[in-house]
Image (tube, rainbow, N blue to C red; front, side, top):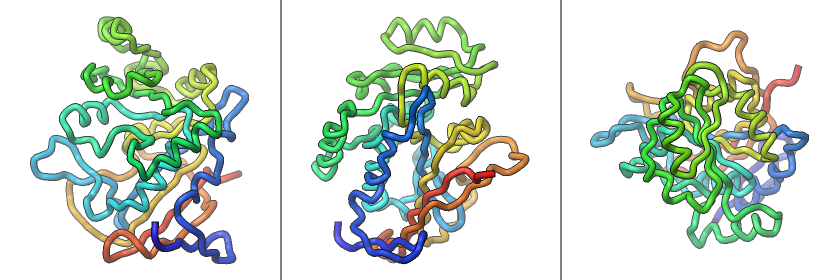
Length: 278
């Protein structure tokens, strides 16, 4: 990729190539002792838009104005370091009707061949395993077909109907009850993933799943791309969806990079945040 990015924080400012910036974080080594390292990623506009309504779609999509190959490269680098991806039943429903942004990474394109090599060199499986969070268990079975070469889990609540659980189990997909009621509880989910020896968990789902991680206090790092754009709009998604948090979930900046080369006609920041230390 042409053009460098500039590290603004911590100082001093340094120029660096974009490919490999996130790989240097070695996230696959940070978990341990039965506790996976959990990280997530979003791209947003200056006015907080992560997804918008679009004509002819049944679900929201990432704004076309923000989509760019440079952010996508870093998204793939984060996936390359994961033992397991967390997604949602909503994503799988979108994928079956052609409304998902892409297949779950790591991407198969030639531009990502180095990431597959990187996984092999560091002793990781060819692709991350997948955990799906779903309270309804309304997931088309066909949506799992592209991922049958990976280990698949569904997390749901204790009140999920047994007939639906049995349906997935009979089709070779394990269902784990984690949390009371129908919703998944973050601590119970992470404890189960820890028992299965997952070390690095990348949440690639939307605001509802992200809120589950925040409510449980299990998020270790947030990678946030902020495009220097204002797009407005009324029917939009922001990063979290759930009850107001009291006190707020405090975050502190770890690093900040300036990218002058995307999106088209604009620029973007690559930000990294961790929970505020007391």
